[in-house]
Length: 462
Image 1: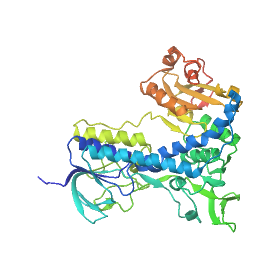
Image 2 (image 1 turned 45 degrees about the vertical axis):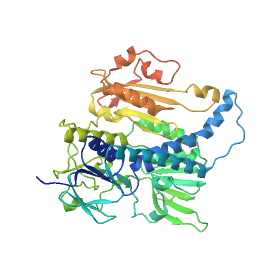
Image 3 (image 1 turned 120 degrees about the vertical axis):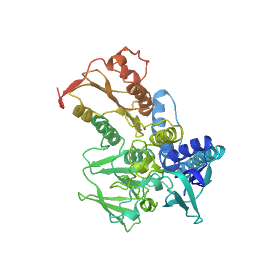
Image 4 (image 1 turned 30 degrees about the vertical axis):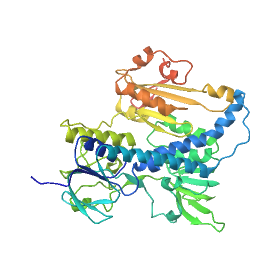
């Protein structure tokens, strides 16, 4: 029987890789995990965690303004970008330490190096050139922002990675993209007082989300002073004489700004990983192809998380890691469940969503009942802020099952997590109707919309 250095070698120290390594090591397996940058991956180091901290920071100007309507007088205030960055860095350091401690406590060997596959069951550690062997190899290296090097001036732009480490807050920024990263950062920068322009080639921001969420969020962003330009895109960026950047769009618009941020998708980190040396199959985007159990076409290599380009969300990577452990080490074959994943866009107001948007549900079901409410949240009544909360339930008329729930408003992400349990459990609209409301809350609207706003038959509203 072949003796390997490790039972499991994990390449990549993000949330998915760390979870798999920690759980396997806790079972007594000989585990090594290699990471070339920092443990925690995109989410903890340069993604959702620091982004959410920035979101909180950017909301305070509105909180200060709203306080006046409730009798508070807020004195002189100022904002320090360096102080925010320093506080954010301390929190990231703390979280990385927890990731490391979890691995060490359970006996996993931490290797601070880039690791590449060198051959059958072999991994090369680039820091030393040493090669080690492993019975199983798990690839969880994530992805990175697409730099679009073909665009003239792309090297002058920043991505979400650099946005977390800017030495000073720009006075103006143009962001190209219309996905959740672009939308969230547009709201962050605008909330911090930056003159912000969002430029997106599509008809409406947030492609794939429910149209009522997309339209109402864009309108809310515009009311906050964010310039949103759809059906256009930046095609060239050049250094201007005054040291700023000149961004030119396809439709001939020119923007002179301090920073240009590109948020045009992400790419899997598979280049130079040595996958081709053992014949691991990749798709057209460079993502690793896997089956329902995260297995590649090579019998000792698995992959999970963003590098597989299935669902690019941190909880999904963690879930896939747990399924890997169940399947490979607990004799309990378990497929990751990618159905009905609740998610949030931390815009301002934020979006929480689970299930099907209306246009997708209309293609899948013969008849829908759609419940739609748009109202002023209670907090805005005294503050005088002009904002609206939007809630939408999509119901399959045939069996009354709720197949989609979409919320735009304060704490929408928190609501989506909870309503996701109901949809996962197969709840019907009748179950919602039987549920007593919590008053006064915004979420009570989810259980008090008794009559459909309209129906959709064979794809047409009636």
